[in-house]
Image (cartoon, rainbow, N blue to C red; front, side, top):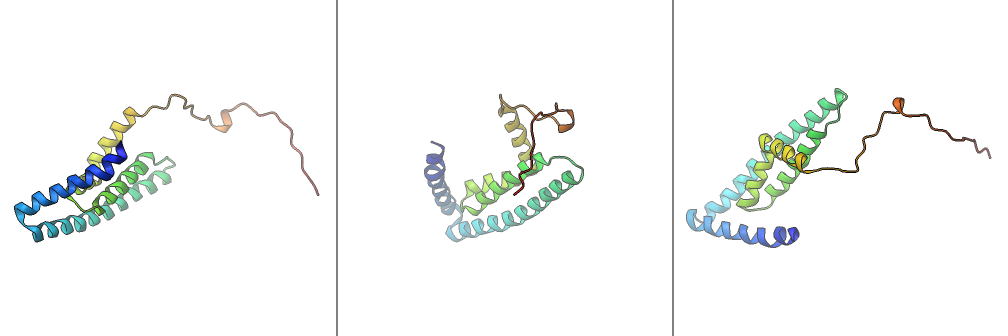
Amino acid sequence: MPLLFIFIVVPIFEIYLLIQVGGLIGGWTTILLVFLTAIIGTYLLRSQGMATLQKVKDSLQQGQLPTIALLEGIIILIGGALLLTPGFFTDTLGFICLMPIFRLMFIKWLSKRLTFPNFKPRTPASSAEPLEGECWRDEK
């Protein structure tokens, strides 16, 4: 069902919006507006992507896992793909993905809904019980 929505309903809605906006402001103005959103989106995509990459580097230098920054990077990637799709609805969703406040809100919302019931974090090797076994060298 989600694929049906993505590949059939969204393009039909995009065409509808383009026709409606074109009727209000004119066809050439609508095309210009679509190109303008693509140019602005490309700039935002680059700047937000670089900022997120810097967050990843900073986290790694501090010895921390950059989980939030990596999730932000995935959302930025999705936003970039949405901005490449011509239309006002996907451009709006793409711009929302590029706004840091909305990315963090989405990550918080998603983290509350995702649960891993069988997840058991690994213990560090230093606190684990020693393993017993045999070892041999196979010399040929």
